Amino acid sequence: MKRIILLMAVLFVVVGCGSTPNQMVEQANSLKATNKTKARTLYEKACAQSHVEACFQAGLLWQNGDMPSPENTKARNYLHMSCDKGYNDACVIIADMWANGKGGVYKDSMSAKEMYETLCARKHGKGCAGLGKMYAKGSANIKRDVQKAIELFDQACNFGDLDTCVGLGDTYAKKIGQEESYEKAKKYYGIACDQKKSDICIKFATMVYENRDGAEKFIVIGDFLKQACGIESGEACRRWATYLRDEEDIKDREKALTFFKKGCDFNDGEACFSYGNHLLEQANESLPNLKKAYEILEKGCKNNSSTACGTAETVKADIDEKEEAIRAEEERIKQEEAEKAAAAAAAAKAEEEERARLEEEEKAAAAEARKEAEEEAKQKAEEERAAEEEKRAAEQEEKIEEEEESSSDDVEDSSEDDSLEDDSSEDDSSEDNSSEDDSLEDDSPEDDSLDDIEEDEPKNREDELDDILDD
Image (cartoon, rainbow, N blue to C red):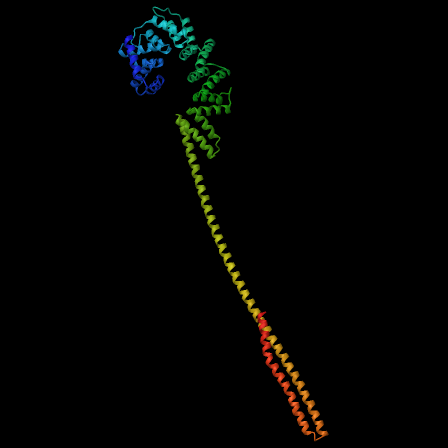
């Protein structure tokens, strides 16, 4: 047998080159549930390189019932290899096989007792528990000793065998009404609870609630449930919240809500229902609050709370109705704003058109006013020019008349002188005639002067008219 084991070890060393034992064990662990054969091969390779846990796992995978078989022989060989290298869990399985005659071996109480004693001396809980069971039952080679069994079970619990702690708790819980049994049950359940066995925390808290009296029981219940809640047991959080909500001795609604929320966070459906129902009561028809309540209730529904499912369905219908009303109102407001915008645009356009029309009218009026002013100025200029011409003509005519009158007076004076001269001397008649001729000649320059005035007057009037037009 030793030769076979040695040959297998050499073979696995050669085949297993390329990966470290730890890597092979990690790979085997990932394959164990889906490919038992491949996982077992990897464990064997790692075992060949002295990985004691790999030897233990290979032994477990070779086990095949309780009858003698090649598989069970291989299983025991690997378990012995692991145990011989100090892997206590492998030693426990071997001792259990001997104690109970299973795994393809004959019952061997003494070998089992020796193995259990070795393990218990190493402070391995299951070794003490196995030895305690042998004393509790008794056999041909071992005398029954209940007290020693209890002591060994206590050691097993203290050395970390939580199953034994729970078993002791169950034993004493049967007489939980008795103070001594209650305290021992509390002790052993408490050890298991401290080691994160949340189901045991809940179990003992329920026992206390149902079997103990007085307000002080809630101190113990709270300790166990809050501890379990602290290790993410949603059920424990919800149970403690329920007590805080309903029990008069410890009623505290705010704390209850805190624990209901924690329970929901840890996916307890009923905790979600209770917390969501509280949010629903506080929603006051506010859509955001209703949505928050619905979210919690829906989570409760997904975590198997039928009451949460029913309430969530009702809340969802309410939310849909409100959202539809909001959408309709938003659409109405949008339409109203669009109409206002269109009306404002139309009014602005009309105002712009009116402004443009008024500007055109103002421009036209200004142009007309300028035209009228120009016409009026032109007419006034013409009137002033005509008046000036009339004035000049009148002045010229008056001047001519004055000149004519002056000329006429001169003629009359000359005639009188001539007449006097005729009376004084007829002989001088020829001279007088000559004088008259001279007089007539003198008058001709006056006629020439008048002609010059008449010729100059039109020219002067044209100049004046040009000056007026220039102004």
